[in-house]
Length: 411
Ligand SMILES: NC(=O)c1ccc[n+]([C@@H]2O[C@H](COP(=O)([O-])OP(=O)(O)OC[C@H]3O[C@@H](n4cnc5c(N)ncnc54)[C@H](O)[C@@H]3O)[C@@H](O)[C@H]2O)c1
Image 1 (cartoon, rainbow, N blue to C red):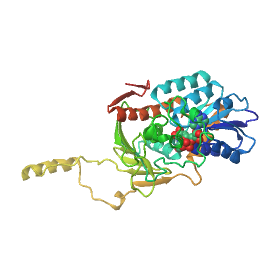
Image 2 (spheres, helix red, strand yellow):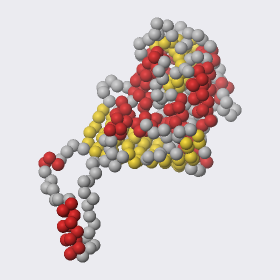
Image 3 (cartoon, rainbow, N blue to C red):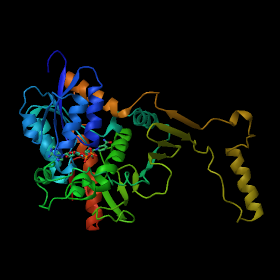
Image 4 (spheres, helix red, strand yellow):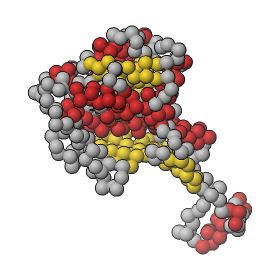
């Protein structure tokens, strides 16, 4: 890094990678100097966006070998995340790695170890950790605004082909223009397939299904707001209900997670018949409810009744009378007054122009400069991805899974 300027490289220049790099380079003092991808069209597009003089390659190791690269954005399919992250950290780079941090549970401790041993900055790209909505939820929960939290419901419902991962395949998706062997990496061998390459989320060999792709976001918001380290037990069910296009992952998934202090229910539905995508987390407490959306939060407060009430109608009349006399000695009859009307619902919106994704990149480059890591590091990333991937284990192996949120071990 020279004169506070940070030079970055993008590894995986698809939808999110170009989105991430666009956010990063909109910040002062951040310059993209290299891009790596396995489809030539995306390298050409990167040159169109960031200049014809940027270095491009299909081999990420060439990017990591460059001394003029300070930090990398990793936005490849999930099966490459941990490998490239570890190589990048060991090459002395700071890393912004897209969620989910890992493709398989056993990769988590290796990424954590690499972050610790290299001392580099590693931030995971679930931007809800930088959202003012979840910060506000966290503050309200800490102030006791909804009393004692007892359950959480979180959902992401979609109703479009793109939302269900049917991404466009370019007309030049040929073996010459794509590096199919490198794409496979450590995944099982498979004949050349543009569908698998461009719609990798639909296949467990490369993606992590609904759980790794979307439950991770819900768990990031949930863990940030509650400060919880994670659940002890995980159970999931679901099915492939609508998008029967050859994919081997479910398009409806429901999960139950037992946290030490509350229970959580997660849902993703890719054919929800809603007019638009719906995303949110609802925190239910003994005295109120907080409901989040992408950019807003609603707080409804319902203070507990000051009297216990009574169920005396089945007692003899004389007994009822005696009971009521005693009851009203303790709880005198109050006349409702205009003062007893009170607001109990507040809706709060992100400030105009606020963008959690941009904020997440600001937090990353601030950490790169200050050397103080943002909290969504390898440990936080594993505490979100671990239980999310366990919902896959539960779904595919049809069993309840145990997770130790402190030691981050599954059984
Ligand atoms: N934070 C978010 O809200 C968010 C949103 C979308 C995607 N994502 C994450 O971003 C990642 C990328 O998703 P996407 O939708 O951009 O996918 P994509 O298919 O559009 O892009 C992935 C790119 O990676 C390239 N690639 C594959 N293997 C590579 C390798 N070994 N080296 C270099 N490049 C390689 C592919 O050629 C492709 O262009 C995923 O992990 C996804 O979960 C996060």
